Amino acid sequence: MTVKVRIPTQLRTLSGGVGEVPVEGATVADVLAALESAHPGFHQRLFDDSGSLRRFVNVFVAEEDIRFQDGLATPVAAGTTVSIVPAVAGG
Image (cartoon, rainbow, N blue to C red; front, side, top):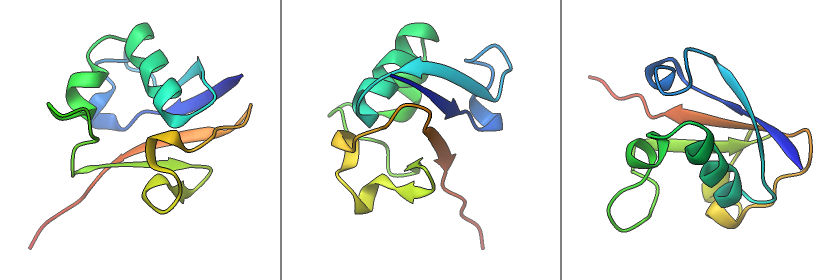
């Protein structure tokens, strides 16, 4: 099933400058793997050495944070938007 992945400005060099990328996947893990396959370099930027999402990377499925759902196993319905949102910090 095709979903749209919203790419933050900081990572658009990996997606050829585009802000949304269509990919196939049934779960967030599938979607992010398909994103890496279509546009190499995302995995290294999104995941740490243990295979977990980096602390500063937030992923939302239809406006819902996957940390409060099933994490990378969160199901993704066809037509859904998956957003990659870098954490913002400051002081």
